[in-house]
Image 1 (tube, rainbow, N blue to C red):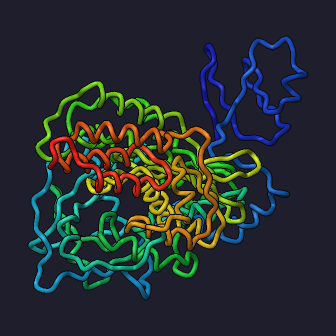
Image 2: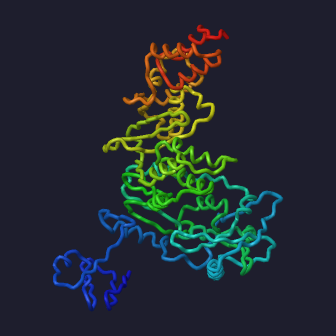
Image 3: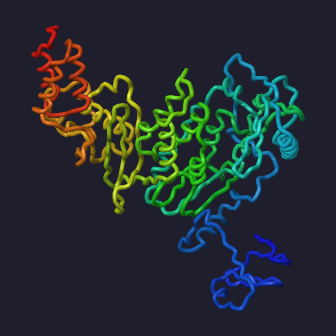
Length: 525
């Protein structure tokens, strides 16, 4: 709680003090209240100590409420983790291997000088705490280092080979999307994080030898749970009663904004983590397929923030196809820049409120479908989430209104947790969907509409239609011209299919079917 800096030839020390405290040095005063600053004049220099609002806290009636929580759970929030083995509990981490399989044996990895020095320090610390012990077993895994957010190095045993032969624990883990959706109406947020969480859980006594790892400085085995074991999250979920199992936590309480799963969550919105926005904004043009894959993995994680993701990404995903040579074209560069722009402009999503009506807007393209779910929280319509996907080869042959129907059906299934039991409005470009209830002859694709009807929705057509709307007479005229130049019945059928994909008028399919049935092409085939 002390700030030290140099001003001229003087070294100034600023310590934490009360609101009205006055701190001075031999050269110049340092003030900690606005009143003292306004009342001061004729001073050589003024120093202001400003802090960032990383937690963005606000007073909650009385700070005594917050202090009461910290006081009540003081044993849960220690400044440091106890330098000893955690207590043995009724549930320790077990490693059950596939019958007949032995733990893997792998050679050590090559490490840098910095990593070797850090490894020696870490091994000494872990031995002192009793978290590891020497091992004489003939198997083990190598060690590698992971760079943490604060810039430090964290050693990890590479347990991938061990995970392959471990029987998986099917304990259900919570879905991040569901957790966020339940935050509607929240004003203050608290985030509970485990203090070196896995190291607070012991390995089952008979399974300790299976955790053996090798280093240049010796062969060891773990007594506490490391990062990277396949069933670690499942066992941690079973010990979520913090005080009962003597777990120690790092918490952020009563925050106006928190960072969670690479997203920033506040009372009004959900945004992409600012750090990730900077990463995307500064992403250089990829020069190989690995660079494309890394960029698409990050972009795909945030696809719910992007309108029309599946319509933008195909030029990039095409480069990942097997046997496809890498070539950077203007079309690919445009898709890359578009995704970067959409992600780096910090798109904002709304936390859904189940008590307010939803509006579902869909669109269909030649090769993709997309949708956006919106709500009005008395500030106009705001996006809750986006969805898009590429059409399969068979789906690309659907007619225009069949693609529109597919788009609605897809997102109703996907967003059933929002829409089930709710009255919602569907906005679409395709007028045929508003008349489908009155059609007498339904195809197999149209029968899917009955699944949509079960949800109960109101359909509206956009004022500006994306697809061409022409009269039956005008399209019949065009059709007759196409018939005259068609060589055989197969070209005639293809012509009719092309018209259905790009145009619409009432009873269109019946009209085209009759024309193909009764009109003979020029060559008489």
